[in-house]
Length: 110
Image 1: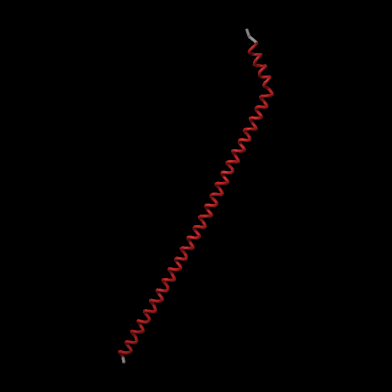
Image 2 (image 1 turned 120 degrees about the vertical axis):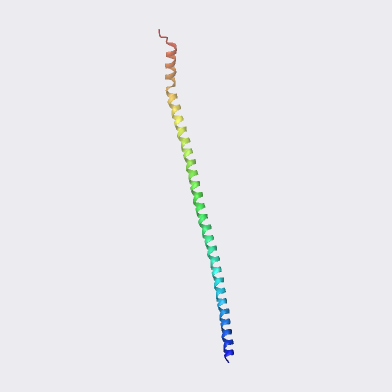
């Protein structure tokens, strides 16, 4: 009878060991699944963050390019206005300057 009890105890231990192996295997599989999910989620977050940074960078580049173009246009307009003002001013005093130059060229000093 002792041998039967001994056999039953061994069987019980083997059964418990198999059950423990199944629990461990299930836990490992669950952990691996969760790690994969966490990795995928982290990749999605990183991709979204990278895309938002890229969009922000492109926005700043387009803004700075726009301002640069605006500054060039503004400077061109200011330059044209200054040229027109100089032309008006020279047109007004041109006859006086020409007369003064003729006077000095024609007049001979002794």
